[in-house]
Image 1 (spheres, chains in turn purple, green):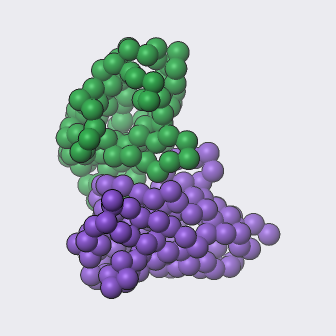
Image 2 (tube, rainbow over the protein chains, first blue to last red):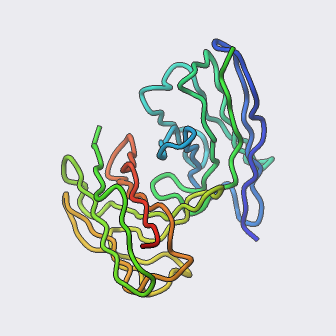
Length: 116
Length: 107
């Protein structure tokens, strides 16, 4: 079964950092673009970042540029999102998703809460 | 950034009726448009890509149309499992952006 499972979310103070992880299984991870998409509580979806198969291309939405870093380890079938300088507006459920244009499918998400 | 605008915000439909959802792009996205369904507590589920191609396993009652700036998702005969929030998303360039969603609720 093809799936991705996110982890690493939690409660963090403004200005703090977190590293989200996504473990992929059931498909050839290294063949796919991967993405992070987030959803603030009760709000819509926002495409945060994506990365190509070998990590040589990365794109970020303007609101996270310079603060978030997407990366991957194909040997470990894992995707990561390093979140630095966190703000209250970064509070959201973060989904790991297969695909760089279309979201083929995503996980259940990991919740990040930025609050003092 | 391309702004995606969906209408209506909420659509009240009786089971068995047809639902028509609209999505407008602030500039042309060609046919680079996807539709997703999201239920509470779940990740979005891909329904349609390339504006009109059903994703694997999606029932034929779901259909998409349009190109350029105007798009439509139609659900021909609403089933109980179709009541959810629907999002459009373009992938013509970066950043990919979503519409704000249309909630399809039981009338």
